[in-house]
Length: 171
Image 1 (cartoon, rainbow, N blue to C red):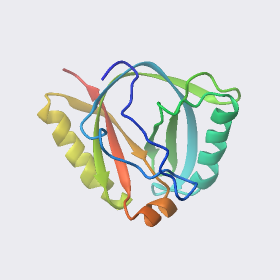
Image 2: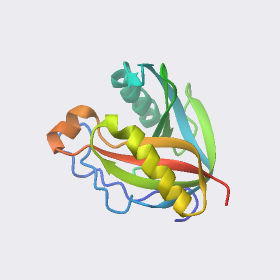
Image 3: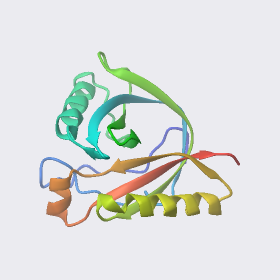
């Protein structure tokens, strides 16, 4: 895949008017290459990795990005990770700087894997990601997850797709 490109994200199938139905086609085992890719960084509070204020942080962050004219519908991804049981970090792709928001630029190589199931499966998914990355002669530097729908929409759609995104270390 070319620098800073993402697989196609189709937002047209959105019967909930909340999260579009995620189409996993094209997202599995994709190699992503970022060079100074721009993101808005937001944080959530968690209790043992369970977010307690994601329902307010996500809409507020998306609104700030939208108000700044920094949404590119061909470049939709939010990378999430938990640096501790008490904090979640979320990186929202942006096409330009967003006033009042913490901006981060990411560079590196990444590998994706599409999973389907409850969030409690993340420890299993991390092992699967590590095996996939190692099968390609690389190591995982850091793990992120792209939660493609909120829990309410996942229930409506009957699928909870999560894209694992491993930042790669070493050749």
